[in-house]
Image (cartoon, rainbow, N blue to C red; front, side):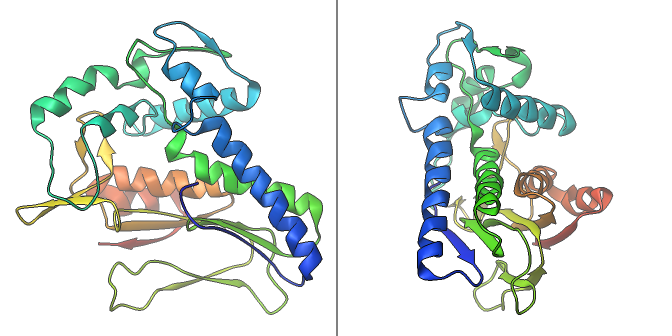
Length: 274
């Protein structure tokens, strides 16, 4: 998951906690191995290197693709799992290496879910195109892992994968207390009290470019290939599931200046940093 992954289990002894951690570890590794674009032995690699051939996917992958296609439509093409090829131009490492417009424009023909042929369970990409589940994969992993832990214990459990988290029920001494990024080192972290459900955050605190005094956030608009310059610094959303919370926070970032209006229209609990 490219981030610290933790499990909290209220009231569990050492033996039970070790058992739960092992369940979580196996769950996280299964999903990472299955869908990470950094591997050469999984379904994503087969799809991305099929050179125009149709690839038949399993039921779990098909469900995730269906969800991604739904997000593409509902976001008016702002959320697009084919946009990962833009990383060939953009390296959000805190440097000043902003690509030229010609480099970005050359990649746009390889971006666009409308260019994909998806008739479940078969997916066909044009040669050179790729899919990347990075926008929803970690949140999905949190939800799956929590379900497996709930099936294995009656203790209150919280799963936290890199700041995206979900809880089964409140611990004995009250709700889980979750600190969220305040957006500034000298500002105290706001606290969210969580009985059950999920919290996810999207933001550019650690992934950006800075050139001539202009900050370029890592949230890219796949329609243009360029960062959403008027996006918040961070958006945190609470929802029933982690994939729902993560989806809403990401879609809000992609709305830029309209992030708050979007979140208010969805009626979700949220915290925005600008």
